[in-house]
Image 1 (spheres, rainbow, N blue to C red):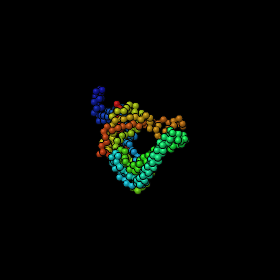
Image 2 (tube, one colour):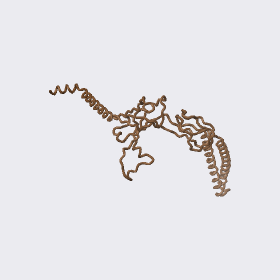
Image 3 (cartoon, rainbow, N blue to C red):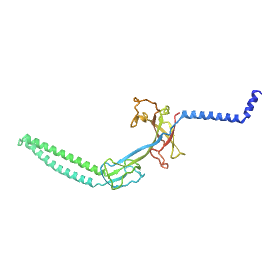
Image 4 (cartoon, helix red, strand yellow):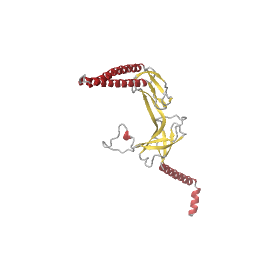
Length: 291
């Protein structure tokens, strides 16, 4: 049997044909995998990130009214909390009275000082008396300025009885009810702003060819059939472990090399569609085209 006949016989053998096709398919899969791996980088260590602003009271007091509910959408500069203004209104009135009294005393002391200026020119009083009158006038002016500052602070504290949000956003972690007493700086709730992005923690070996401006496809675990277009915004200057609460000390103990992860900021190409509710901490899978 010659070579040609042997080849024809092998081609007629179904097992050989199947093995050949299987080998070819395996080669194709390996080629695709290698090509994909050299052109794209992906990770499942990625999450939605955003601005979470804690809204706190600037002054202590009892909560008089609350205008918010859980997960409510708020507009910028919207009134959300009112504290009992009674104590602060009284402080304003007291500060105004103190200012009026200080202004009256200053008026008299300044008039006396003006008269003393005339008398010192005529040598009808001593230099010590003149200096005393001048010092009293200056002290009276200072007391007026101090009273003005106290009134300004009292009015400012009164304005703080109304709490406004600085930006538009959504209410989360609400911890305030009418009637409760709050301290200055106590968080009342958190405000999640609508502008969000992705923080993806790629291995340091994956960012060799990664650069800002490269296109990204984002798949959110909550919406598996939806692909969102995004762009690499920036690469953190250092690994995530370096900026953790307890960064590693490689100079002590036994050193074991660990592949580090570097946070990459990825921004969406378009404003987030409210049809797809989402928030910080939700899992995503980004696919970055590096070549």
